[in-house]
Image (tube, rainbow, N blue to C red):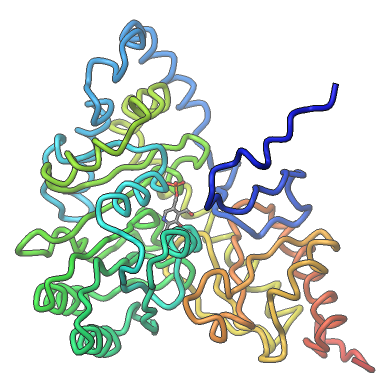
Length: 410
Ligand SMILES: Cc1ncc(COP(=O)(O)O)c(C=O)c1O
């Protein structure tokens, strides 16, 4: 029997279909995967056993015994952690647990954005945020960054320009603490300036802080949310980078009046309960000891990556040493188009994120690439960068010295 053709039945306006997954590349520098060797697996197994033994029967009810905001012990842990680390004062009932912070992005966007709106965003930013804005038909105004994060002179100019045109931006989206992809940390002075500008223009700040635990020296400025005098900051975070992305546990910190609007859009009857319970059990006793172990492992991998790039690309690869996180944002020579480098690199087993997908300005992104160093082993980082240099030289003629050996005829 011929199978039914669903094509004419599909709803209008769907995004392009997903590509079938074919496994990870041999040298995997894409996505935000974590370091498998730094996963606190035994402690998570113990936590799962303890919490299920003690209160597993609550799984029989939607929302456990905690209601739609999420597992209460986890929200209580978060309220304490956010106070201690980021200076945020919030009650457990001002925290909504989400299915990863991607759902948090969707919920915040869902209550604020309509097609034709304008938002302000760092010129290099998270592809998951940029692609959502594009799909929603929202105009994203990119603000350049320097070593201290988003440039406040450029933000002031953009806000003034929008005002002249009668446009009120719906929010300023920022990843201020270990920015994705640049790895910068917005200085405290700039945080105050951003809050001042946002208040002056009546624009909220949307603070995405999922890398804040992964700072090499463990020191961070207070969150924008903490420094804000008049509210106006929606804060989101995640356990994806500090524990494990496959758990899919993120959260939103906002005033109840906003969470109430978001809850009305969160139609999944609650995020997965087991992972919330395991984190709620693991974190109070072990989160603080786990994080420095993780960051030590990540820093060592970053050193390997920077060494490999210096060895294989020499001066053809420019980058700043990031303050933390899992990414290196690399500038290759102008003749390299990383969108065109992607396919031949992948064919050689090296997966990279092309810069234009992580930037509001495609010209700025053209010869840049984002490399995740968390997931690949030290050996794979070295071998992968050597392969990438060969492919890049073959396709674009650079680097013309590889491992300090001159290559002719390129
Ligand atoms: C800045 C930023 N926000 C949000 C996310 C989404 O993470 P998750 O949904 O795993 O919490 C990511 C993932 O890479 C990210 O880099």
